[in-house]
Length: 348
Image (cartoon, rainbow, N blue to C red; front, side):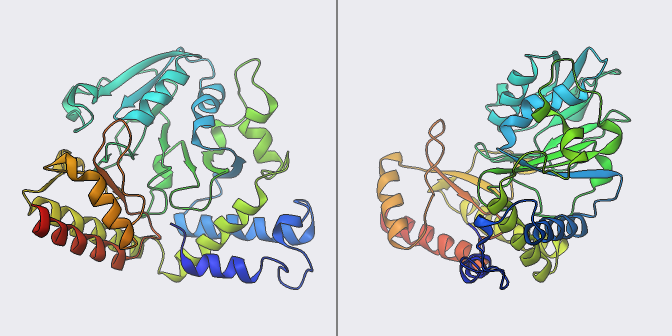
């Protein structure tokens, strides 16, 4: 979801942004009007997330999957391998892509548990000389989430925060690089945000395409090429909306409360179940199954009639999945809990 308030502002500004006579979609990305939009969006993101001047903030085209290649191209330098946590489908995809460029050491592998828990720290196999350590704080498909930021010493820590960014405060200084596709908590698809320590810029692998060089994008203010201007604009509106909600500390309270309501309803029921180790349950993505899977389609149909949409689970897992990103109002979770209780009363 996007916040209704954000979409209403975009609607009001669609044909004429601030008296400019142009839609944002019609502006030159190098023009005065759009430059002001871009600069304000970056300033608001820096304020929200506490991003210091030691970090470059990049607004890039595409999604997080492009970063699976860009990260090794930019961060390997003269190192012979990189460390990766495998805790779900997205981290597995990142590992597969990084393996094209370097040897990957899997620090911890959650696949044997069917991605239902994260191996204990005592079992982690961190390298002494890795170029970087990569992890995915939240895995959207299996609904598994790290409870805390991994301790990796002085090795740069890289995080795919596509589904958690801006859902709670971020200790940016603990990371070498954070990246996030916009289409979960920031805005529409087509935009990827990269927050990278400036010390990590400027030493790409030989043969790296210009468009995959973080330093090039940083040096040109993310405008070496024409960026995803409208997605960037909408992201800026979301940043301003988050500030009006009270910032990331307030969003954390709301998001934790939303997730707890749904998990409480699932755990109190014999009709619904969630397979994830409670220590690592996601705030953002909550998969659950019905005791009788033949009722799945009826559940989805009746849920849609109540305005509860996009609840079908990933095709690899089946069942249901509720995604509780920032823009999902608490009232939406309350309605889902009510519907689940009513459905269980009638069919359980």
